[in-house]
Length: 296
Image (tube, rainbow, N blue to C red; front, side, top):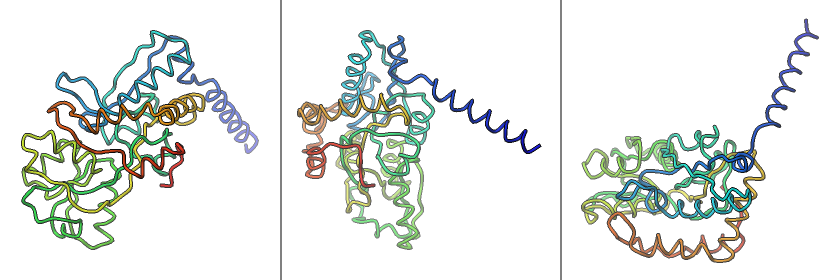
């Protein structure tokens, strides 16, 4: 009986190895005429969002289109089609891990927990979580939220950070989850929540595109440090090398700077407002020696 069980286990293990070994890589699929699937967000301004015509646009989208050009060149698939797939903060990681998207072009933080499931390329931005509140709010820091309502987006790293801070600092705040960034902003505007915790660059972008931007303000110190990077499937080394090499080329050649300038220093849709956010010293330092390895 034990011998039979051992034999069955060996058979299953070998079958799994054979299946894994024969799995088609992204580059093989593209070379055979397949499409490249780019996952994007709905309201992660200015990284990945819909413009007035419901077309995916943004800083991360432009970078992913550069990566798509590198895939075309590598595979010889000059007519490679691109399919855009909208994801949320809650399902983006699973979408990539399950092979439903080849690149996730949004505002996703590269951290150790997520690297267990997916891979990341070199960060294209570094930010940190702060608080969005109403302009007339007395709240200046997370300690001011004792007994109040704090919202963050489901599946995000800032949500985990505020949940941890709420317990460690005994704030007794009510933590709320929003399905997306836009809904969280609406909750602050309506008074359903007193503050929205999210990456500050997203907060500035979201506030700038509200009907009354002056009714909102960003406050507080960084609650987290967030290196944002394009996400891709794990265990596809050839595809990852191509993506990393192209990101490194964009950075070292400085071709990435006009793309950055377009989205952070010039007026952008939908309201043609500028975020006026120059490249930070943290990002400049990281780009001196571009690497996908981050200490988080």
